[in-house]
Length: 155
Image (cartoon, rainbow, N blue to C red; front, top):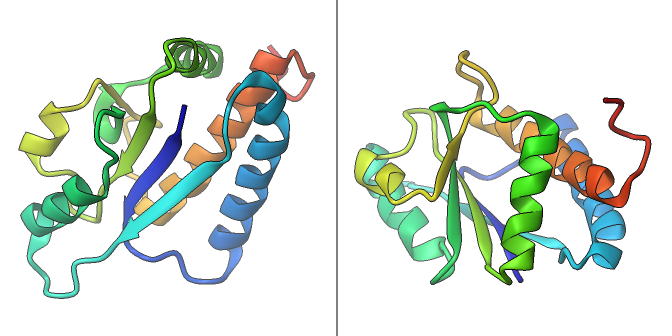
């Protein structure tokens, strides 16, 4: 199994980058004994300003072939943390690669979004895509702790 996060934009050094790094390191330590690999982050950037279509083309090239696609989109379902963990375990048990896709400021182009195996949302509000990375990294770590039976998630 392989897990990737394909995201539009470059995460500059600062608070968000520190949080993402910390949660992904925690995930790697907690997930390894559970059969969950360290997460690879793939950043794409449309320097020509082509909008969602150009970003979709870059994301499409960045998404590893055959991966299950989980798109972060405000129109997606809003799973609980245990439901999210269960889904991650399901992909692991199927030995299926997994790619989380985070679009840019204008979201994910509809044709790419329709390819999703699962669309999820962190709420009905719209979040800056850099903050979504932090939230996703934390939820991935939380999922690993739930699967490990750790007390981090207080249900």
